[in-house]
Amino acid sequence: MGCTERGAYVTLVSMADDRNFSIRGLAAIMPDDVTKISGALKRLEELATFGENVFMRMAR
Image (spheres, rainbow, N blue to C red):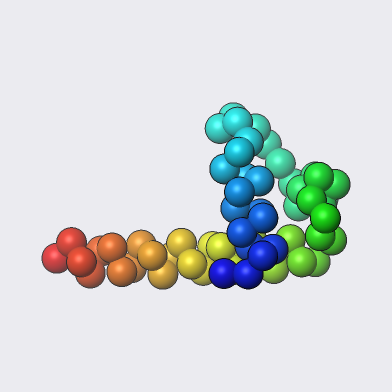
């Protein structure tokens, strides 16, 4: 996981649970541009899917 992914993750986790956000909104509060943040969110989504698959295999 790269710095942009970590930064996006930490920023999202630090937000209130009921907070709505957009990629442009994240770009306004993070040092990265919309393209980097969008890529980071896609990568985080891929990692979450991978983690779910590993967890399900371990639970069997």
